[in-house]
Image 1 (spheres, rainbow, N blue to C red):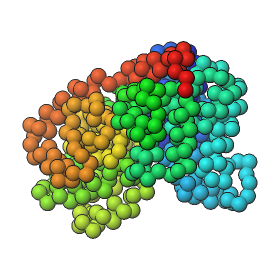
Image 2: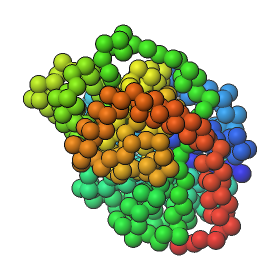
Image 3: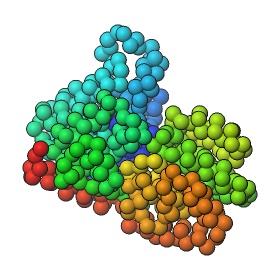
Image 4: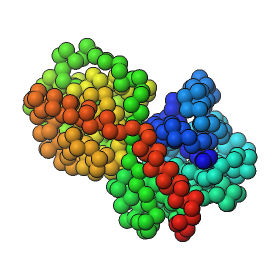
Length: 411
C-alpha cells in the first residue's frame, strides 16, 4: 500500500506534539511495509541543517519519502503570527506575491493548490491529511486522483482556543471532516468533541490512541542536574497557551510553595501566554522559584523529564497528550488532567480536573512528601508504558485505510 500524506511539521523541525506523532506514525507504518510520501512545508533557510536530517529519515524508515513544499506555514500558527512572518520577509500585505500568500488562509489555499501537482506526480493508493491546515490539500488530491481521503484530527479549533473558535478555521476544519471518507481521532475525547461541535456521524470516526518509540536513545540518558541536590523539581512542558493550562499550573505552584519551600517549578515551552505567566509568577512572589526554559527540542526534552521529580499536565482540553507517555518512559511520575485523551488509556498516573487547583496542589505535595507514593507511581507507570509502541497505532491506521479502500463508508 502506498500513502500520500499531508502534514506540516516533522522532526527535527517541529513546535509541538503533532510533529512527534507524525514521525512515530510514519515510522510505525514503515514497519508494516506501508510506503509513505510525506508532504510538508519547507523549513526556513536557517533550518537547512535540520532538513538534512529530515531527508535522512529515509535511512531510518526505508519506506518513507519526504516531499517539501516552499511555504512559511508552521504548526499552531495564528493569522497574526503569519502576518509577522510576512513582515520579516518584507512582503507587503497589499501586493500579490508568487512566493507566499498575503495571509494565513491564502497560504493554506496555496498549499492546497500545490497539492494538485504533487497528486498528479506521485503514485499512491490513499490520501492521509493531518489537521485543518492540510485538509484542503487532501481534498484537492482526492479530486485529482479519485483516491479515498482519510483525515486525522489531532486537536479541534475548539480545543486550541478554549471554546472560542476562529470561524474561518472551524469552517475549514468542518469541510475536511465532512468531505473525508473516514476520520481518525486520537482519543474518544477528541471523537466526542468532533461529534458535538461538527455533528459528524459517530461511525465515520475511528479512534487510534498514540504510542511512542521505545527505541528512542534519549530515554537512556540517565540525566541528573545540580538542581536535584537541593530542590524537588516539578515540571510543566508544553505550549504556553490557554489549551495547556499554564495559568492553573502557576497558581498551584504558589500554593505548593506555601506548604513546601524546597521546590523548583520548571516551565518549558513557548506560546502566546508566556509573558502573562512570567508576570503572574512575579505577582505571586515566586519568580525565584520558577525557571522558564523556552522551547526545548531533542535530547533537552528528555533531560528535563529525567531531572524532574514530577510532571504535571493541567491541560484544559487535551485531545491526547503524547507528552504524558514520554514522561512515563523517562521514569517521571505524573499528574494529568482528566480532560485529556491520554487519561483514557493510562492508569498509573494521578488525575485531576484542570480547574481544581486545590486538588492539584494536594496531589503535588503528597507525591513530593511521600517517598513510597513517588516510587510506586514511578515504578508502575514505567512498567505500564511498555505496552505503548509504534506498531499498534500503525496497525489500527491500516485497518482504517483498508476500510476506506473497500469503500465501506461513503458520505
